Image (cartoon, rainbow over all chains, first blue to last red; front, side, top):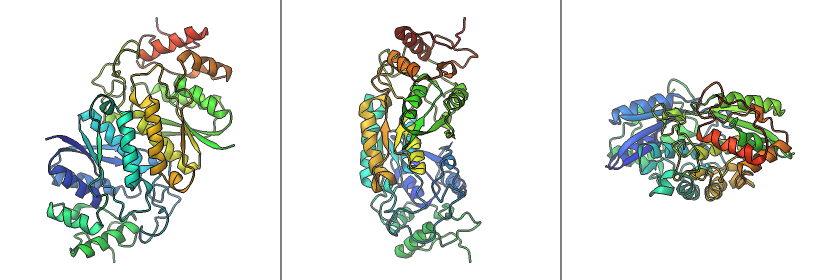
Length: 222
Length: 222
């Protein structure tokens, strides 16, 4: 089987993406510890990788908290409440986050000889994030062909975003088919012991399970 | 003055790039601590920024040593000896390094409202590095326009590589005109107390000073 790097945040989308990639790839999961307020995601990523039998799992520190500029990493900003489908770019937007994470994924792919980097980017529920858009993924792919040893000397590393045009409900149905342990995933931005059920990420997750006609296996506050 | 982010490694090229950007920008220097064997560069970056009166200087940790794959970060690989102009991609190539660093630079630019990211990439002396080529810079620029808030909502962040087509001698002459403190820069890959004078980076540096008709102010071993 060909190798693939899968960006695994510990959230619902990336866990589903890991299951999809694992169907026909020897996967290497990659998680970033980037000073996010919800670092609990990293523990989820570890648990998901273990449960799904992924033996290659790397965790890379990236000091995005030095940059700040997002309610997810900046101590001075509040986590935004409510849906991410509101007009404009949400305060949880981390400047250039997917660009940074994809770059690191491509570096790992070059190192281990993987032909693909999987990312759980999704445009339907997060229309406000510029780096989740297909136009970005396509342009970035060209940069990767031009700027890497793998691209210059061989076929290059291909960015695969299988969830890009799926609704949250479709993602959850697909993942359920593939046996994704959603009880281990962590979505909430608020950083409490249990998911808050109110932040934009929780709202989208709950709506997704409802539309999929499935029960969300995690516990919520209140 | 408009703000600009300048990627400052502590080497000769990036110090010159900082001087060029400082002529007409309010600069914010950005240095990466990426588990390189020659972390002494970071101390050089600090000293250069201080000497050049740059008050905004951020150092971001990026765990590229987790990835490895380069003689600069991988304990299992030797630093390559000799010139970087040999055929092929040098072992010191760090997978996707400039892609990662530019992504982080763009993130910082978005945060502080800078219109440009300066990088000291240079194609003449490092023809073997794919992510120093103009084709890469141009393709990456397109990805940045498409994938950032600054690109979607405004003019975007522009990547500026003023040294791209300059020879090492031209870079040194330009930097000398601008008063770059080359005595504070660190170029050697070998990690000794003094520069080795033999690794690919030292060889290119020495050749550059010789061709510029100037004395290299740093001390070398032996």
